[in-house]
Image (tube, rainbow, N blue to C red; front, side):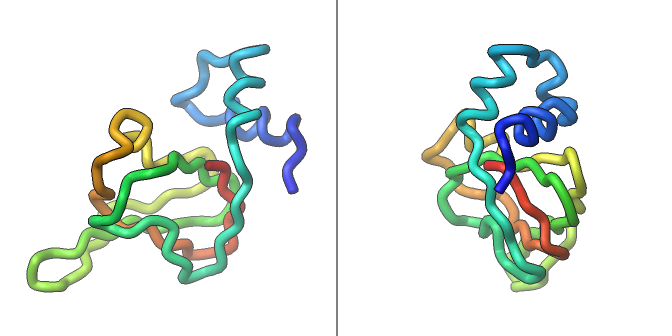
Length: 110
């Protein structure tokens, strides 16, 4: 389990949060929860509710979109300091626009 200092360090490396320092960084860290996913685990699924913002702290994850004909198209790969789910911060009632699947064993803060 990540310590408070490890969470702050991980968040501080994410370009989106480069502005955060001191108490702002601490407030973000206090809200984050560490989650671990095994290779092949679906982290979020296209078309499902958009709850949660994720920061990849280790390993990799792949984003895919499923077309109407059922074909899955890779659209992005995420590694350490990358993030996804930022739209859920603005609109929790929306749905995920892509599925994200763990490729390795990445702990992720959400």
